[in-house]
Image (cartoon, rainbow, N blue to C red):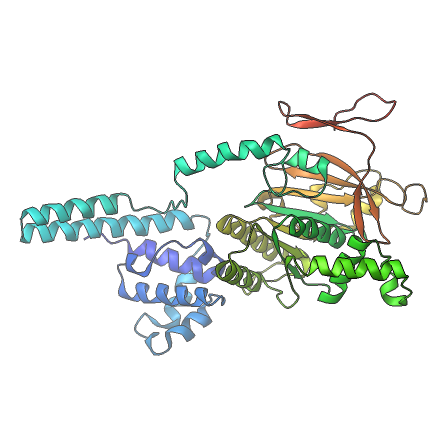
Length: 443
């Protein structure tokens, strides 16, 4: 009989050591040969489906009176303590699955030997095909469907974007828009406009018929909506405190409120862990089936997880890795705001570096695109105070570079510089920015 009890122990021990691995767990209880292991794994899945952390304590609580039958708390601790690394988790799952497949086929052969009829042959053939194809490589789309999707997207590519528009022509041409399934990092120092730009992306997406879920860990709903209204209606943000509104301000606010009330927009301020955000997102997508959904999280350094980590950078890495998997799983773009370290202030004339990401963890590895907001001139200089750059520091599927913009702080609004026209160069994957009376530079 084909049994790989050691592999089963490693899979369970790995999850007990790092509960976040349940996001990558593709096995089912039936795949385990040991009844105790089967029950432990079943308990783990039940805990995970309730969006609770999978730990030795929660598994012990879940199994209650059965804990002695599966080896006791000491056995769970022994399994977790025997794991040196979890990097082989997928391979270990495959070993468990391979053993199960052989057992299932062996049982089908035994049934045929006991009853060698035509029906038995057909059953054996069906079992053989079913378990031969059994694997951990789960794909949601067939090749043909994906190829057709690629052809359909060529029409959008001719318009300058294949993903969701950003409201910035230059950025859309350079990146193709924000792609579903991507994790996009928007990083900057404080007061540089991270939240304002995230709201700009949200407003543009909603205005175009998309839906946005904003998870704000820093600001309440009211000030966020006031910022959106100010940007949309060109109302100075300070007036929300002074109450010195003009008649035209009132008219603009009323029109803006009417427009925003029609948007597919939700703002959550009480979700602070990855598990909370995942649960909200999953429920929202399942219940509402929204059009072209997008997630915005403000911001990474305020997030936490239900799992324990020895160091903060490991926790940050776990969060970004989980968010990337969530983006791919639901085929949605996730815009994740992040802080930058103070080192950026010492070299203002240059764009930030990937190493400037605060508590970086695995951000560089997990993100599909990393963008930075920065000012290359002294913000106290009146001639340059509104000028800002969106620098693309990493782009997994395209070029990097600077996007010049204006940031009207009084309104919290971003605008294109309007310094010239654009000429797309699809064969080079970049574009030219035409400047008056100057040679044409490559951006």
